[in-house]
Structure formats: C-alpha cells, structure tokens
Image (cartoon, rainbow, N blue to C red; front, side):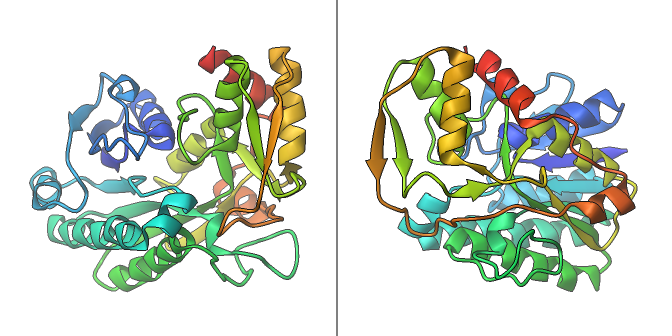
Length: 304
C-alpha cells in the first residue's frame, strides 16, 4: 500500500519507514528537517520518496491530495517537553495547527487511515499504577496537552471518514536518537559518557519512566496498518526504570563513570510512569521483544 510518514527522517519515524519499506510498501517521507525536530538526511531510507516540507504548509497538504496515500502515519511533531514549556505557542502551532492541516488534506485525498504517535505525557501524574488506556489524562506540560488534543481531533475526523489508531508511547529510545537534544535521556547520557563529560541528573534521580526500544515501536506501527482501527494503545515495556539506574547501566556498558551534576526538577516533569500494555498484546498481538539491557547495548553501539 502507499503510506506517507510525516517525520520520517526523525528518530522514531525513520525506523517506522524502514519497517514499512522492508514489508514491501510504497513509502513517502514528509519531513522539514527542522534542527530542533530530530530529522536528519542520513536517516532517510533510500527506497522511500522524500519531500522536505513543513506539516503546517500548503505544500504539505497539496502533496497528500496529489499522492492520495492509503495510510498517513503522523510522527512529525514538536517533541520536547522543555521546548513546549519555553514556547507553548510554537508547540501548539506545530502539534495542533500542523495536524489540522494534514487531516483536512487526508479527507480531501480519501485517505483510509491515520496512525498517530501519541504520548504517555498525556497522562501526567496519575493516581494509580500501572497506566493503561482508561487512566485519566491530566497532562502537565503544553506538549502533553497538544498530544491529548490531537486524540480528540482524530475522533472528530473519524466522522469525516478517517479511521485512526492512536499509540500512547512510553519513553522511546534507541539508535538515531539525538544525543545533543533536549529530549531522550538515554541518548543524552550515552553521548556524554562516551565523550567523558559530566551527566546532569535532575530532581533526586529516582524518578522512573517506562523505556521502550524503537524497533519494538516500529513493529507496533506495522501491525496497525491492518488492525486496531479507531482504538488507542499504550506502547511501552511495562516496567519503570529510574534515571539513576539508567546512569549506572550505561556507565557499566561503556566502561566509564562520568561525574554527576545535580539539578532541580524541570517544569512538566513526571516522577513515576509505567504502563500496562495488555490491550496491545490482546488486540494487535504486540509485545516488546528487546529488554532494557539489550536495548541500551544496541544504543551505545550505534553512538560509538
């Protein structure tokens, strides 16, 4: 089938493109290569067709109408919690107005399905762990708010003929994640430890997140091509890991112990978050296959 992947030169999106190409699909990539967004030319699969366009642009909408993709996979986004708290207007322009621009074009093009890269950040701090699809959404950052708003827009556009699958990701990590960016603690720590530089740990370091390997995420996006219509799925490992534990494991894999610089909590940060992914297992047949130690080893190897 013909599939358009927005953000397909980025960290997660490029792995999704690779999975689609490997499965024999006709894949188009739409990516602005924005310096803050993670899109890189070296991530572009040579067997896909690439268009350097901003999702807010008329040209991006025109491309969808002209190409008429059967599926549009939405991974282009302003993805940093910190950038969203520094500049909420930018966050909303990209994540909401850009989204509406694309969805209007998809309706006009007769697109069958939207696959959306949502986020566990839509939950904020919850009353009970683990988080599942029925947990209340109380986002604590503009980024989480715009990701939650997108879910509501997708339900509205379903009435106009677009089927959707929404993924609420845990903290995705792996090869191609930017070690110099604001988001992605594993990539940032790996880059700094390899360079024998200090590592900043915010809060007390015992805050726990659910880290899921990017290859497992790409596999979920492949399953969603033919399953999970008009439904929402948590995609994560099912276990929490503290920042202090990540630091210790990465130092052990790399063989160097970087000095730690302590810092206060960042606005929008969440202390504890891990997921129950039973619904993805039961409906999509998806379970994570790469455990944390294996995934960290693969990530270190890619950044060396």
